[in-house]
Each structure stands twice: as structure tokens, then as C-alpha cells.
Image 1 (cartoon, rainbow, N blue to C red):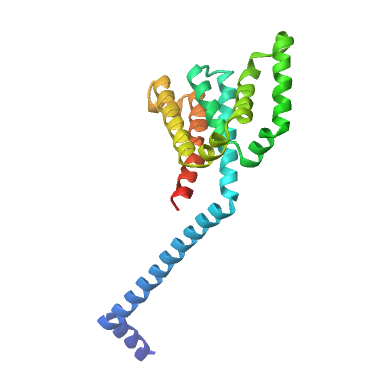
Image 2 (image 1 turned 90 degrees about the horizontal axis):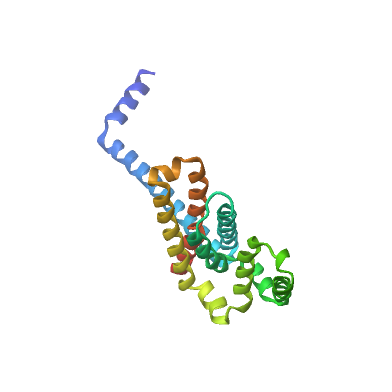
Length: 209
């Protein structure tokens, strides 16, 4: 037994054995780092090629913009916010929903809305103006805007610019960065604006890779 203890003490104080153990640990850490990097790369490639992550983030961005529109009709009335969210929603509509609204279904809905607005103005509520504007953009947008701009660099940059502009204007209106994240009505607005960045940032990564 004493011999085993002495052998252990000898190994623990042997510089060669210590260097070998350190080398093994460094090798294991390097393998973990490589595996993590490969996993992240595969996740990004799967999301970009499969389109699943892109679709989910499009829904997040679109829902966040609609959420901010609802807030605009309650406790955050800002014409600037309203006007900027309309093109943002147009650019972040999920592709399959955009295709449905751009077909005859969207045209019929828009036609009914125009008829109601012209002949029954009392039945056309003011809160329907913004959804009608978004639908009109989807239906009448040229193919260049509906295709190239929405799915390319231009649309991503526009979304990022809109998000940055709304965030800094909201912070200014709240009286500073701290108030934007601490006031009861400011937190919900800030969270909604932050979610506006999710899809364009991912789309930018997808375009780069």
C-alpha cells in the first residue's frame, strides 16, 4: 500500500506526467470548442437552408409590430410610430401569408374594404385604416418591391433602420434609457421594439453566410 502511495506521489510531482496530463486536458478542451463551433455552424446552415428559423422569426417580428400598433391605439399615440410600422409589417410578413394576401383573396378583401369606405363611411372605423393600408401595400406592390426588396439586403436594412429609429425615439420620449426599461408603460413598448430587431438581424446573418 505504501508503495502505491509513493508511486502516486511520484507521478503527481513528475514534470513529465504533469505535462502529459495538461496536454490531454488542453486536447479535450479543444475538441469541445471545435464541437461547439460545428454545432453552431450546422444550426445556422440548417436554419438558413431549411427556412424554419427564418419563418419563425418572421412571425415574431410581424407579431411584435402588430403588438406595437395595438399599443399605439391605447397608451402610446405617436404618428411617427404608426407610419413606420406599416412598411415594417409589409417587409416582415411571413412568405406564405404574403403570398395568400397577394392573390385574389387579398384583392377581394381590399375591394370590399374600398366599397365599405366609399358607400358606408360611418361603418368604416378609423382603426381599420392601418390594416387596410398594409393590405393595399401587399396587393399593389410591384414585383420588384414584393420580391427583390422584401427578400434582399434592401428590406433587411430598412427593417434595421426602422427598429433603430423607433428605439432611440422611444428612449427619448421616455426621458432616458433608464426610464424606457423601468416605467410600467415603457417596458412593454421597449420589449416590443427590441423584438423588431430579431428577424432583420437573423436575415442579415443568413445573407452573409
